[in-house]
Image 1 (cartoon, rainbow, N blue to C red):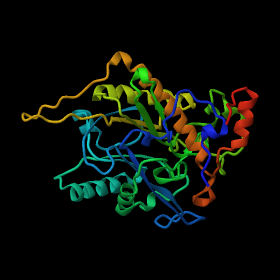
Image 2 (image 1 turned 30 degrees about the vertical axis):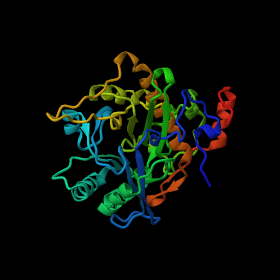
Image 3 (image 1 turned 120 degrees about the vertical axis):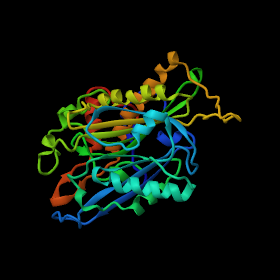
Image 4 (image 1 turned 45 degrees about the vertical axis):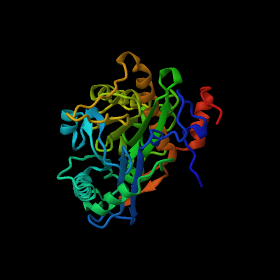
Length: 363
């Protein structure tokens, strides 16, 4: 059965989404997951319980072709490998991988070895990023393997994207509810070029009391359904979010950095504050033509005018907001290590709160 998404519940959003309302609405972009769920009960490091995984985003699908890219952060208590070369060159080559904090190394190694073998290149500097799932999963148990990372790569497809307790987001928490993977997109009007902006988030951030849905402070209405041990508000390690932004608009690296910065506004629209121990890290890339090289190596590329970027900024903020809410709508209650329980966002109660404030759209 297909899971409902935020719009299905009547949660209001601004802007017009693409056909899948997903990052894959940007042509050529594919997404794959590998989800690891096993065991229950008391934590035994190395055995479980396990609630983790890997998510892969491939900017040009199976092809190894460069795209312009850039990164930014709201608060930097987190890791994203490959950013030094990305910032230096302005070019992203290969997939973007999302996993848990302690599995960055094994995923990075897997992607390097796979790219060298698959594409016969001498080296690779892949983008691998993370959030912390140690509240629900045996994060020290090294359960993510190279095979899991490669599987996520090989599973990547276009079309609808699985959300919630999947891939790198399997064990994540968002505003005290179950979090994980979420996605959304926006299409610009024809007069603005008709371009698409797609966003995918791995949401493990935010405090319950600050949660906003449809601009309404719904967190104030949910003092129950807190994680079982009741301490999540005091746990700084459960407070990060990764935002990956794709567009088919012809943007150069410095413009993509500006676009990436706007993810912060989408996070703020849901009540995220970029806390001290939060890793709020963003990456944006453009799938527009990289230009054919002439005999002397010079490439001719196009650049969207800066004075028209406001529509792209809005699209990024709106899609980020919706992707985060989609995460919580899709995610299901999960019991992890030592019986730690994180509850799903209750759909009917959210609708009741929005109705009270006259903010419930027609579902």
